[in-house]
Structures are given as C-alpha cells and as structure tokens.
Amino acid sequence: MTTTLSTDTVDVDGEGFLTNPEQWNEQIAETIAAENGIAELTDRHWLVVRFMRERFLGTGTAPSIRSLGKESGVPIKELYQLFPEGPAKLAAKIGGIPKPKGCI
Image 1 (cartoon, rainbow, N blue to C red):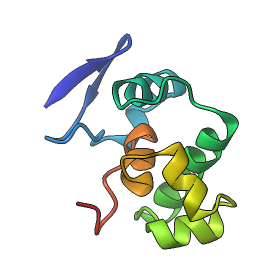
Image 2 (cartoon, rainbow, N blue to C red; image 1 turned 135 degrees about the vertical axis):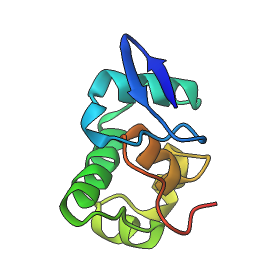
Image 3 (cartoon, rainbow, N blue to C red; image 1 turned 90 degrees about the horizontal axis):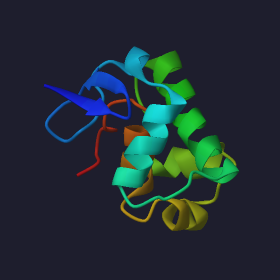
C-alpha cells in the first residue's frame, strides 16, 4: 500500500508504518507526528526518534520500551509524556521503521 505524506509518496503497511525505512525523511516524520497528535517535534522527541532509527538500522529490530527508557537517555515517564499513545510504537512510526515486536 502507498500513501502520500507531505510531498512524498511512501510505502506503508495497514497500520501506517513505513515498510521501507529508506523512504523516510524529517519532513515525513513531522507529518506523521502531526497526524498522530504531536503538533511539534521537540529536541527530546528527535532524540528518541533518532535513537529508534539508529537501533533498528543497526540491528534490524527496534528497542523495547524498557531498553528505550534505559538507553536513549529519556526516562520512561517522560517517554509517555512525549508519546502519549505508546512511546515505542509512536516513535517507531514517526521514525519510519516497523512497529516494534510486542507492541499492540
């Protein structure tokens, strides 16, 4: 399935996650964030999104919420403030990577 985000056409799955991480850019990230209730990505949002992308691109899997809280430098409580609908799932979506395993 394809969809148009900002001025880019990208491949997404049934839940709106990009299926090709190479199609991602920061403008797409901002569009996905806005569509999911985050009006503006702050430096803290970007820290988490970039951590998720780097981990996925380096290992082939996205970090769990537990490792995200321990390793990203952003505590779990703050992660839920930044990404209220589920930090790992929403940060992955904004970051253009597949939904982490274990996310509903």
